[in-house]
Amino acid sequence: MTLGWTLFIAILVAAQVIGAAWLMIASSRTTIGEGSTTGHVWDGDVVEGNNPLPRWWLGLFWLTIAFTLIYVALYPSFGSFSLLGWSEISQYDRELDDAEKSYGKLFASFASTPIEQLAKDPAALSAGRNLFVNNCAQCHGSDARGARGFPNLTDEEWLYGGKPSEIEASIKGGHTGVMPGFGAGLPEDTRNLLADYVQHLAGREIDAARVEQGHPLFTANCSACHGANGEGNQLLGAPKLANEIWLHGAGRATIFDVITNGRMNQMPPQEPVLGADRVHVLAAYVYSLSKRE
Image (cartoon, rainbow, N blue to C red; front, side, top):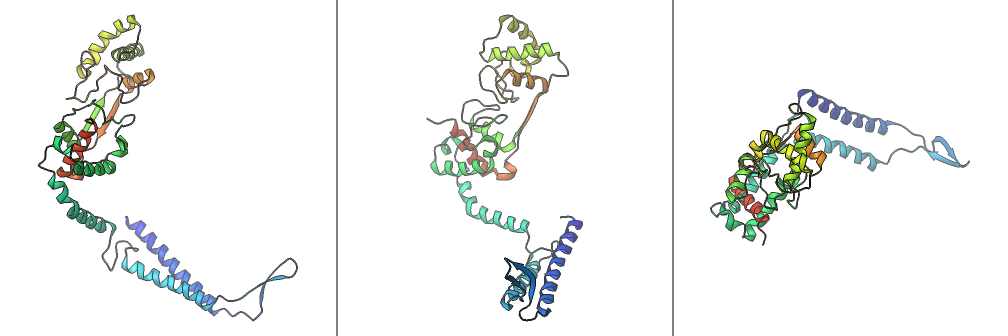
């Protein structure tokens, strides 16, 4: 928090406390004659009285002011000042330490077990699912079936490889995938032919003449990453185009847009956040999703 915000909050809190105290003092010193009214009359004969607040009610207000003074002294209400030395960061760090003491041994017990075996261990899968729901479901979905731009993890289609070691490496270090846009370098007719040829690779019925025209264009512009026949390249993270599994959408307009404008996806590295032991268990859970019998 900046110094300006600290001063603003401190002045605001102090003004509210002082203002509330002044109001209580002023109210308690005001003399109201017995039977006095506010002058408001309803229905001809219903008169609004003007009576002082009961003492116990005023006492409740004084208690709230006292509570406020104690709270702002114990907890950081004026910048970082706190008699208890409390802060949200220190509390978060303590909670992390407590969690590591409770669960660190559990994940460490799985560290030496191969992923293939952990993928069949109910205890490891339960722990892995908890990690997945809290760290991966935001992108890949709670059922791990992905969404547009986020891969489905329950099938056999892998951008960077589906072997246990490859899955673990992907989770540990993350990946950044870039599909360059060809809008500035290729004419619109050429991009349309490429879109038709990509659909042909996926098994769709496309005019034979356009397929013949598109083939050399694909070889010249796309095969270096996606392969001569659209089989993909896991070393580069280039998707396979010779099927009906689409990461960014299957419509012709979407395919044309991807060719024109490109795409950039990032899988953030999880080892700095989770640690190696948790990544190992998480990799086993992800591996199990596509190996269900």
